[in-house]
Amino acid sequence: MTPREFVEKFRKAFGVKAPLPIAFWYGAEAVNPESRVPRCMIGAIRKVCDGNPLTLTAENVQCGGGGLYTAFRPMEDRVPHFVSEIEHYKQRPEQVRAYVESLEIEITERPYLNFVSVDKLDSWEGVEAVVFFATPDILSGLCTWTFFDNDAEDAIVTKFASGCAAVVSFATVENRKGGRRAFLGMFDPSARPLVPKNELSFAVPMSRFREMLATMPNSALFEHAFSVVRKRINGEI
Image (cartoon, rainbow, N blue to C red; front, side, top):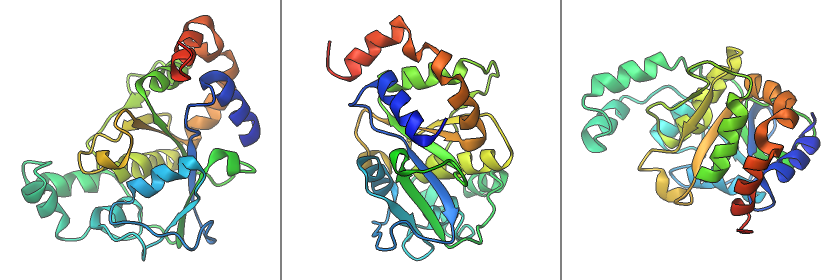
């Protein structure tokens, strides 16, 4: 299924009011070399759903955690202390260090991390992951679709994460492993004010999304039960 065909199916499944998902990849060329990013990149990433292409670089990603989770640079020495003793997201700095080491993030050699709405894609070539920003009703459909052909207990997982880790890091590592997990995120209190209050993120590595593209037409997204949810997503009931 091509990106254009997927957009058509997505609109039929979720309606016109559901934000289109975004795709991201690392590359040698920038889709938007003029991108400006506030200290937290999440707001800029969410705006991609509105059709604003985004390019992240080692220069415009200013947050220490963001630099790590986008794989532009190793973790700064101050990050474990900040996460634990300033933000109080972990009890001890040692927990932060151990957790980051477990993520297996590989620093990229490519200069650009590009984000575009999926309707701007010509193909899925090179894409690391597809990310949805979704309300509970939209998540109902995404989770139902994800569970359709996957009985694993970790078909969908939620992990401790900053917003950028939940959107970028987990799905990138999973894609490069050829994995099948999808990641529910955006629980980070520091990032939450930068997305609509009723949305979470749902990141699917391309290794898994290719499978889901094949199962989409036969899933419950086009059956009666979800059609009622679709009407509510679009304000019809």
